[in-house]
Length: 370
Ligand code: GDP
Ligand code: ZN
Image 1 (cartoon, rainbow, N blue to C red):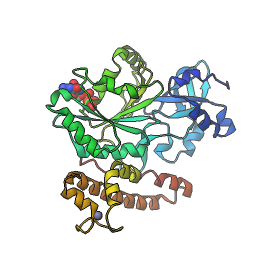
Image 2 (image 1 turned 180 degrees about the vertical axis):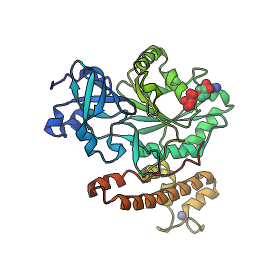
Image 3 (image 1 turned 30 degrees about the horizontal axis):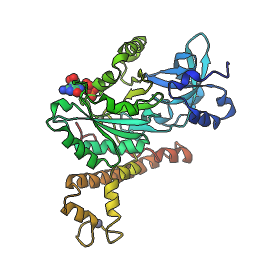
Image 4 (image 1 turned 135 degrees about the vertical axis):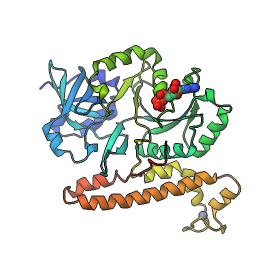
């Protein structure tokens, strides 16, 4: 086995001192393997970027044996430790380095199992269109997922060319998304690209999310404009993968940022998102902290800061309704997950269970959207 690869080529794909440190926590044997980044996922294989170029890869038998949940398997954006098979452009994945950030969804079917749909992203672009599809409540839900992922959310309002007063909508989003930058763009008119340059630094990873039809693919192509050629080249290698549904890719933009598409909410379900929820509604949480009574249920006027804010118009009643609704859904899911993990408990060890439980209480929000 070849060891001591020159990792320089991986910096272009987001490797950094941070990851050197993460790698150094792995066992000695694993440390000797080479790091690589997962850039595409097919049904039974991966495309990875190794220090010696693009390889196809699969997980080792031992990896497969030890995997408990779908989320234990590699996902697009992951840094993995691989054994490189020289001359074959093939690698064997032995470990996934702990994810810095990630988005997860409930796996297909009726299980409570979860699947990683993108990892190690720095920014999460939440895309919504300024036509009849515009929906603040949807943006609030995406924000719960975004905050929970650990990545910095950024809201992009697309198709400004179809809207009479885009700044009015931007202001409404800013109100519903405390601490989140909001940008107005039109791919059609080629407007707003400059506003996005602060996110497009070399080595940064961006995931794009939003319901179908809001303009995600158009945005991706627009950002990659001068890079179209390259994307096509990458795609051509993968004629096989293009036909599979799990296919997802991480693209390198000319400026050096990496960008990935993720499925829209139609597929995406939220999970154990209490922290994300608190952050998405931090303004309301702060108000609740100002109520006179600590256990205020915000139903009577008696010193209730929330009722006060609803009365004087500083808190949008629809936003407040969404705050309560999503809280209820989270509680419901926590119960559902609790009973499903009790059923499963014979099969998994307690530490595996704990790991699973901490991440997979999911909200079923599908009927809501689209
Ligand atoms: P996706 O499903 O989110 O990937 O959405 P697409 O990128 O496929 O776009 C859906 C539709 O919106 C397509 O017909 C695009 O041409 C259109 N579209 C995308 N961006 C813009 C825009 O900035 N302005 C207008 N008017 N249409 C757009
Ligand atoms: Zn109150």
